[in-house]
Amino acid sequence: MSATVHLPTSGVSPHLAGGNGRQVVVVVPFKDAREIRDRCGRKTHASLGIEQASAFCSSNPSEWIATLLVSELAAAGFNVVRAPATASGPHIPRIEGSLLKLFAELRRPPGMLADRWIEADIHIKLVVTSGSGLIAKRSFYAKGRFTPQVTFAFDPAVEDATRKLFKDMVASIISLLNRYPALGAQHASVHRHSDGSPSNA
Image (tube, rainbow, N blue to C red):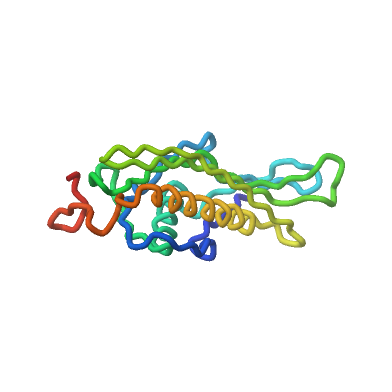
C-alpha cells in the first residue's frame, strides 16, 4: 500500500523581516530536476529494512516549493509578483529555482534494530537575476529528522527539513538584495499588461 508525503503549506515560516516593501519576481513553478521524480519517499520495514511501499507527494513538489517561497518572501516584507517564465523588469530581482531532491525514508543504523528515524532531504538551487546585470546562484540543502514512537509518519521530518530550508533561503535572499538596495526599490516596478500580469518591459 502506498503512502503520502504531505507537503507543508504553513507552520514552517522562519519569521524573518527585511523585505522593506521591495519588489521581487518569483517564477512559479520551479524546474523539477530531481533524479527520482515518480515518488517522494519510500516506506521500509522497520526491522528488516525491506522496501514495503512508495510514498507520493500530496501536491506537485516543484510548484509547492516555489509557491511557498512566494508566501515566505511576502511574510518577510517583500512585494512579491508570482510570474511565468517570461516576466521580468530591468530593476526587479527575478528568482528562478530548480528542485534537485525531495525524498523521505526510514533510516536505521546496521545492527541497531531499536534505533530508527525518518529522514527527509530537500535540495534547491536558486538563481537570482535582474535586467541590470545581477546574476547570483546558490544551492540550499536541508535534512529533516523525526523519530517515530508508534506511528510511521513522513510529515514531521519533511516539515523539519522545510523549516530549515526556508530559514536559510529567505535569510540569504534578504542578505543578497541588501547589497543592491536599488533593486526592487519602490521607484522601480514591474510593468503590467491590462489584465494585471507582468510584461517583459
